[in-house]
Amino acid sequence: MYERHENLTDSQWQVIKNIVDDGRKRKVCLKRVVDACLWLTRTGSQWRNLSQTHYPVWQTVAYYFYKWQHNGVWQQVRKMLVKKERQRQGRQEQPSRVAIDSQSVKQCGCFSGQVGVDGNKKIDGRKRHLAVDSLGLPWAIYVGAANETDAIAGFELLPQLKSCTRLSLICSDAAYKGEFVS
Image (cartoon, rainbow, N blue to C red; front, side):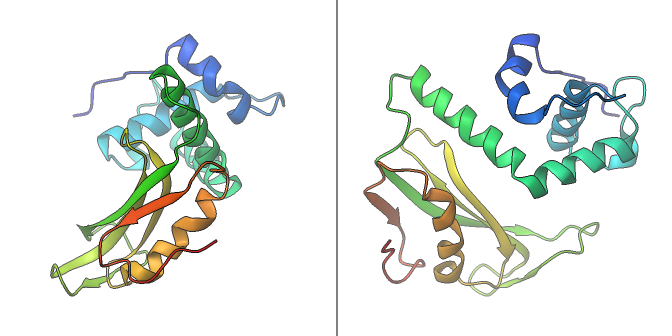
């Protein structure tokens, strides 16, 4: 069903290797673990559907995925890639302004986490909140229950934006009531 296996190139791996690999000896190749995580994200497949001919066993991939999520590794990789893309496009490393908005997503049957009903959009599920720069690159991400107000969820994005020293303006729609003051 999911036959496409687009793995990281060696040059792409070199960009993120120092964040992901702490230098310890392992029996598993971390590049293959990252490839498996990217495949799961791209396809939306379940852990158990990982091809063992292309990737490590699903339990190993899940272990590293959740470990890196807990340790902030994925967030570090995202921030580093966003900064590199801004530099590649001739922009300063950090934005001076970001825009915040949200999107409600219907609940799928396989998810049992924090969910709720977005009263405005009549969607039962979750809501993702993003702060993006003028290039559309994500600087902060927060996912919560759909019934959580945008005003409260917006404050969950702020700690992720503390490293943006150039940031002088946060734009949002009226759903994010109040003022963001640091």
